[in-house]
Length: 311
Image 1 (cartoon, rainbow, N blue to C red):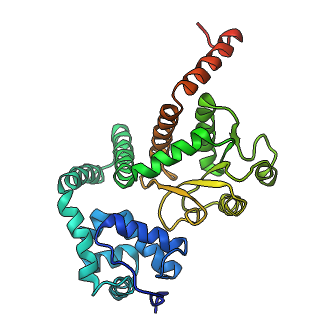
Image 2 (image 1 turned 180 degrees about the horizontal axis):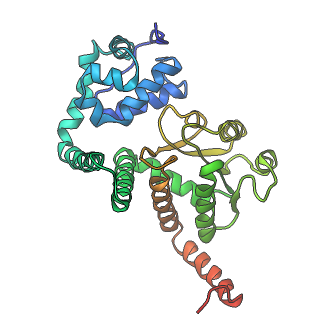
């Protein structure tokens, strides 16, 4: 049956894409009466993370894109409580109707990008294409973000007694950037595993109510996922920066933010992740107010005394 268990109990039928996103999160955290297999849950998460494509494409086109059969999509719709795929599909079509103008702007970007494939790209074409893809990724996370979740995350990062940040491999650079930015605004912020102390030692320093920011995207780094799970079990508040609602970082996270990375870059694109962290840092500074201003001034004082910056 393609991993689609029957619902445990009746649930309220989502009628907006936002409600479907919340349902996907709840299913991933085992907080819903509906239970889906890993494959089915991944399909649902991909659909709600790409609402415009889901709205415009037929069931056959979606099945080909997702590499599943059309009947799999029909069974998913009925397991969620809809009368069929058409009923489920109408949720996305209604949302698309309300945001058509924004969709066509994105389509224009795609058309420009596709035009570059007609002939070999110039150096300018490569730069323009990657830039446009990063813009689309930024637009995607902005369009999906919950302002209340963002405000709560900023407040936690501003006022928790201790904050640690953890990301490995390519994401390690992002973790360092976020740690540096938070360190400008408040005290007791550091990388979880730095300097070279190890993950277990870093977690041992954390107490219930402290905050751990974790980040990973497909293919996910097992050590980061394990650290998030263990930290949450110990009462640490976990904030996740990841790619989709099917991410293994979602279940242990109190706050999860979904930032796409798709582009023609040779690896996972980091542009949208850096912009999101900049936004988060600005909100933390605003939440702290004068405390952030005083922290920045104190830091500048040490920079001046040590003559670190060249005049």
